[in-house]
Length: 387
Image 1 (spheres, rainbow, N blue to C red):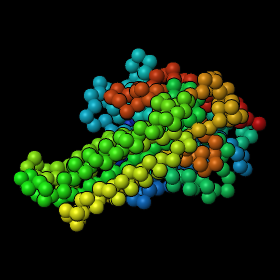
Image 2: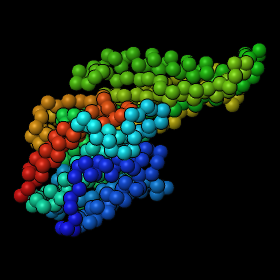
Image 3: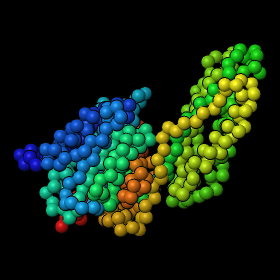
Image 4: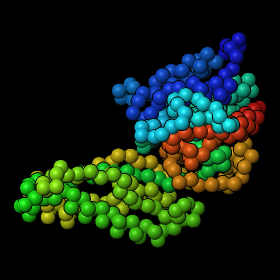
């Protein structure tokens, strides 16, 4: 560790992190390399896990005593676009005003990353009785894509954390659960012709509408499977994007739409989509191919992640309540990488500064008070981890 270097404050780190445009369509390497260099200056050797194109990377690091167990602090480095949003402040620059820090990703979730990075010297100076892990991922905002290779690395490692805190914005309230998500795209290929001879064509938009109506039908019985811990208390289905057609006087040859399911823990999401695909292949495609042999309906997966449901009465949950000074456990409507870590055998809870009410919106911000609360949680965690 470079003892002469002045430790960076939370605000210093947030200033740096916000300056990197890590929108999911862009590379996150400049940010990752900055964190890597910082950790190396402290004598910590992180591992970078790249995507296939080597344009993005996860960062995984461990320090403290050898052996299994310990706590992992996890967060994603990517942010959502600012396209079409009306910002009062520069989105990729920290602006502090009236006790708030503005910038894209300030709440979701570079505020948490800044708190963690600023706290590392504190953890290093402490005599820890268990290791501390860092897990910073890419492409969370587009379906928790990047973290999967990080988890594979974790599974193959000889030493594994026992617990994980994901610092998504929860107003520093401990969160034990969220729904899972499946997102799919449907491509309907019809047969074009002049609209004056419409029966000779296969109208892709009309067949897409039949599928969307079927989706609405499949959503109804899901409302009968209730879990009052979640809001809404049942699994949901919706069509989010649809496009198709070329001109009013042409029977449309193609139509594409995207659908999403947010499902409760214990729900078999695949069962619902299997019903939809069976309807497409067994009922609609034969009708379409009766007119045009090449007409078809195809589905492909866009993104998916499992739900999270951790026991709020567990020892880990009670410890987090103590570290965060809050025992009011919640569930959240948005998803995280938590279900993936949990499936990998790492007990996971969510707690971080800021609110998703500000995330993804213009003039996104995290309050200084929330950052201070997060810093206190990390200080309490450090005290708990001491010998």
